[in-house]
Length: 221
Image (cartoon, rainbow, N blue to C red):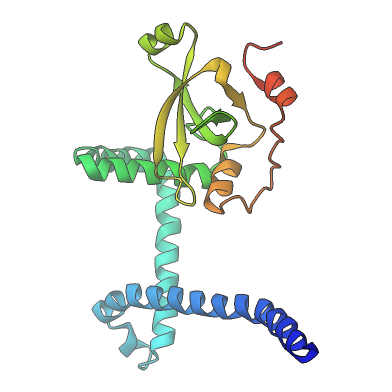
């Protein structure tokens, strides 16, 4: 019996140690394989393998360096007036395709929120959804329609409730101001929290007890 317990406890301890390492190696190999498959057409099209004496790894590194440099150049141009006009027109062309417009717009807005400190979202709020006593993170996008405010007999906020771990998917809910609770989280921290399913809490998630909710509610003393 002792031998069985000894083997079981040590096996579990070893599994906890080895498991994450194996998973990391597998994920890294998958990512490297994907990157290699993505770079292959560029290598074949430019014949970099021949220029690097058939050293395929060196050709991949060289191609990756060129792509990174190209992205840096594009980013530099995008921040200038010429780039803003150029890429602004590209965005307008994308907006002509309904499905692509939705996907592109959502991903671009989320990416900008993670990378940049400024965001189109006004603030991060908590809303009771899908039932009372259960709170979800929401991104306040602005004021709700006037007729919704008239129906609720108070101001209404438009709140995007993103999914987790994919925050580009979610739903828009119209929430009365008295039922939205301001969060101390930044937009970047909230999206990071969603993408890591709650494991990244660098900005500190506030505790949602009743007293704090009353103080955080707009319009409450």
